[in-house]
Length: 297
Image (cartoon, rainbow, N blue to C red):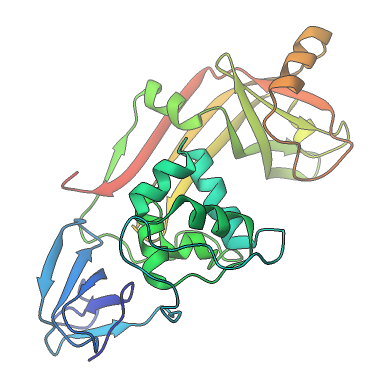
């Protein structure tokens, strides 16, 4: 049995269909990748030393050669200048860093790399080693798979369920915090063709949800009725997530001052393209949410 950092150790149950345990290999004790391993278990997030038995196998997740220096806070000098535009990896790293309100210097310190090297990763197409990606993912509170963009064309929630999950209700204030200020959510509306659920880019201004659409679009059918708006987050790597549901009346925003204020505060333009200048607002009359976590948390 041989493994690399970032591989998954899977322990099968004693009988067919029985629960299994799995975790990420975060430490190797032999250069050739033979056991034992330090494993971070997906159900508890605890790291333990594991000597795999006959009921265990390794799930390899793909690896890159270790090309850059990996040790020391000053390691990882940027390679020679290349293409001026970032690759998908660089965009994901920069987006996640900005979303968490971290500077490059703080992120580099957490990931134990030089700030100049992090700048290079964000601004140029790059192929860093798995060890570098593991440290970056840990610094940003995400997963290597998310930074690589694996599974972007697949629906979320394909990871293995937690061994002992807990589904708990969220308080209204926690729901408001998770809604945050902007993102992508879904609205459920009734159309002449029947019910429909469509994604929209949204903003939150003064506890009011607002999105832009076109007058003849499906989201515009929400105007004048009570609708449901849902936003969620699924972490496949950790088999956990949350969802928030807001219910309330939808109306068109027509007051020039309000339209201007929403436009000025918008974080992004509608992903669906131009011609979507009609603002629709939803003032929730009911706000609920739920979160899935390991039972111990």
